[in-house]
Structures are given as C-alpha cells and as structure tokens.
Length: 481
Image (cartoon, rainbow, N blue to C red; front, top):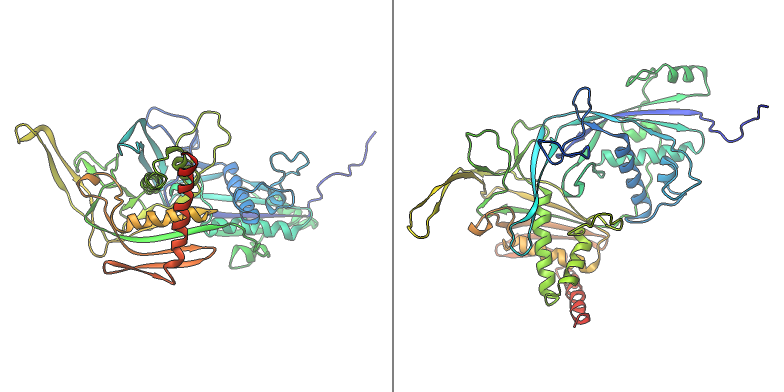
C-alpha cells in the first residue's frame, strides 16, 4: 500500500556558480603515493594528465573557513552555524541534514611543474637531519582550476545564499589556502570570473532550463551584478571571531643570500643556484624565499631563545615553541596533533642582482686546491633597492607568544639571524627597513632610522609582551627546580 512521504526536500530554486581558481604561489595537491621520480607526486587526471582538485578538498576548505569566521579558531562546530547550514551535518551529529551545496571536482590547467627539495634541520648542529630529505612536485603559480558549485534551496534561501557568498568571498579575498603545507606559503589562491545562474524550479521554464543545462554552459541567462555577492543577491555575514597577530616586515639583503634550488635549468649552469619560482604575469622566474625556510629558521631561533630564558629547560622550551609552530615530531597514530598556528607566505625578492662565484676547497695540509673540489654558485646579491617582505600570521596569539615574536623580529632586523644556507661564510644576513605588527590591541609600525629603530605609537606598549614571555619561561625554570 502506497504511503505519502512527509519528510522530503521541496527544492524551489537551484543556483549554479562557476569561476576560475588561480594559484598565486606553488601548490601541492597530492595523490598520497610515492613514485619512482619523486616522493610526493601530484594528483592528475588519468585521461589528460592535467592537475585535478577534488571537490572534497574545496568543500573542506570552505567549511573550515566559515566555521572559523563564525566561531573562532579551534572551536567545535554547532548545528546552528552557517557551515552546518551550507554543508550539512558535522562529525558526531547523527541528526545532521544533507548538504544543500554540491561542490564539483575542479579540472586544472597547469602553468608548469616545479620540483622542490625539503629537508629537516637538526637544531643542535644546524645541518640536515638524517633520513629527513625528500622532494615534492608542485603546480607552478599561474595554474588555474575550473570551479563549479550548485546550491539547492528549499528553505532559508536568504541564509544559504549569504553563507555561500561569504564562503566564496574567502576564496576571492585570498583568505583560504589549499593543499599541503598551506601554512608555509604553498596554495595561496584567488578566485576570479564568477558567473551565476538562477533556476526557478516552481516555473515550467525554470525547470526545463535546469534540466537542459549541459556541462559548464547552463541554458539560462546569467544573473546581473558586478560582484559575486551582487549576482547572488545576498549579503556577506559580518561575524568574524578570528583573532590573529599579523606581522609584515620588509628587509634588504646585507651581502648575499643562497637557498639552493635542487633542480636547475640545465647542466651547463652553475653548480648551485638560488631558488627561483614562476609568478603569474611574469615571463622570467623570480627569486623567492619559501615559507618553509622562514619557518625553519624562526622555529630554531625561537627554541634557542626559549631555552636561554628558561635556563635550558628543554621540555618546557620545546612545548612552548611546539604550541606555536606545531609539533617537531609526530608519532604514528597520534590523533591529537595540532597544526602550526604560525602561517608564513612565500616571499619574492625584488630588485636583486645575481653573481656567479667560483669557489674551491683548500687542502689544509698542502695549502693548495683540493682535488675535484672546484665548484660555482649563483647567490642572490643585495643592493640598496633590494627588498624582501616577511608576511606572518599567528592565530589565537597569546601575550607571551607576541613577546617571542618581537624577539625574533629583532634578530632578523639586526642581521643576527641569517636565512638560507652558507651562513658560516656570511650569507643570508638581512637588514630591517620597516615592519608592521597588527593585533586586536592595536597596530605598531617600525622604521629604520639610521642605527636606531623608531616605533609608533609607543615602544613601551611592546615591552609588556617581552616581559610576559620572560616571566612565563622563568616560571617553567622554577617549576623544574
């Protein structure tokens, strides 16, 4: 005997949104396997061998962005959140509803493939750690992906459109990163060329238009509007409970800088060349400092400072630094690991020179050239106009952590903390030019003034954070005595 269904979705409208996702920095979307050429290969379409971005990855990033905006970093999702309304039930919610948003897989168009070396540095010796060398494939900046979303509306249409507009604005506004190592400068993206179609399923023409849509070209007029939010006829959600400390610092190079590129253009060039990377709109590759290099030197110096202040209490110092930069080691099966709260973008070096230098190893006994030890290298050479900008964001900053961040800035500013390789022969020294630190308590600007640094509005405001850092590590020293 037939029964009437009382629990079903009465879909009244369908919205289709398409756009183009553009990589502004290299990105790694991996397939989880290891092949004979590289340790971390890219995920590609088996038919055309072009890059491929799964819809699950896009949906996960959008959902996480909405959750963090509305609830703050590290907060668990609730059933009343915009993320749950747009993406359905969350983990542990047995009564959660199906997501009204369909996120399609995004086929890609590669602008090129990069190969990058990665290595872990031993904090004691500042040399490569044993068995911690790897390489990975990266999609070059300028690669694009075709985005497509479809939103089914049966109730609360205004809320769903607002949630969708807010989530996609995060892509458009460069607030969402994708792929592996996204807090180390990879996967910086933006979205452009939004197109929007609305299908009214309560009308015959609207239903037929949706049913007759083919692939990427819906058979319906595009919605008018300049911005995506206008095309959706929605408004952005203004709630943003995320707390961050944003440090941008501009430096010049005091001498030369060398971060080795493991994969040169040809065998005819220098033996070692500073790392260059493609950038959208530029014909030639540009010299860069990877976010991994920034994070590596900052982490090791942070640990050194913490151990010094705490009286060499290794465990307390390591815990403090790990809480900021993420765990130094991860045990297999550990489900309580937290990601780094420090995000650092990849830095482009502008107006820099380069010079091929020939070097030779000297036999310490004979004083002559060591056999088969002649090599050449091409570092980045600084000039008065050379500029490098460190762009760092600390999530949910604590007062003591801001104090440590200021101490790290001081070491970079004065050239005491070199970056890159061959620091033993003077490479990698930076000189501070200007910096800005923005927190929930205000904004401070630093500017080089001869041999001094001018701080506005007041330098005394920053001393409290350094004192709190010293006090917290001093407490750790007392508690272990």
